[in-house]
Amino acid sequence: MKRTYIIAEIGINHQGDINIAKRLIDIAAASGCDAVKFQKRNPDVCVPEEQKSKPRSWQGEDMTYLEYKYKIEFGKEEYDEIDRYCKQQNIAWSASPWDLDSLEFLAQYDIPFIKIPSAMITNEDLMFAAKRTGKKVIISTGMSTFAEVERAIVILKLPGDTAETLRPFNLNETADNNFAVLHCNSTYPAPVDELNLSAITTLKDRFKCEVGYSGHEMLLGTTVSSVLLGATILERHITLDRNMEGSDHSGSVTPHGLFKLVSGVRELEQAFGDGKITVTESEKPVRKKLRG
Image (cartoon, rainbow, N blue to C red; front, side, top):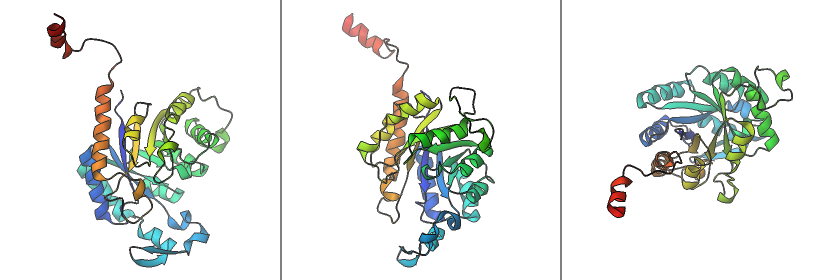
């Protein structure tokens, strides 16, 4: 079984505080995760005009929604520190760009992949631009139709980087496979009966590409079991406390849960085996004793 690549999604659960971000990096590194991931936005571009002036309370302070988005947004000073700190902790990092400005910002760092969030896989300008970086592109499929997922994968698979290449395409023909697709349900937290983990198999069979799972459910076992269905990348949001202020904490894993999740995946990898029916080395003395 291929070793599962585990991403601890910090996202915006750092609350705009670099010290909280570092604590979450520490937890992810100590638990054995391969990478941490953040989210990067230009709020002026990402926040719809009709929402910018809406009132928002954040940590006891009244402000507009646009001001709130800036409060929790890291800039170059913070990302320089994240880059330095992750190297010190021997863990990779990346971020999800929500706009072209943020993608250009992230391109200045030596990150192993670009993650396009579920909300943005229909943004074709962003998809093409992410592909042009030459880095591995990972997308999530939450709240998307099959047709939307297929079109996003065609963009990533086809050679070239212009919209004119979006011709009728046999997904089995020679193509660029420097990407991965994560099955996802975008509800926070996601209802267990809507996880549809068997879609991991559907994606693998249809698109012949690397497939993973981005989970937002409260449970851990469902995420671990996705590895048995063929997920080779796992992504889960992490938090210091699910009761912290903010929309993503309720679907996040606590520090204790993250350690259990990673150890569960690594135990499954060890236990998976090759499927051959044999007498194992540890069984041989038992066999001799009990069968003579």
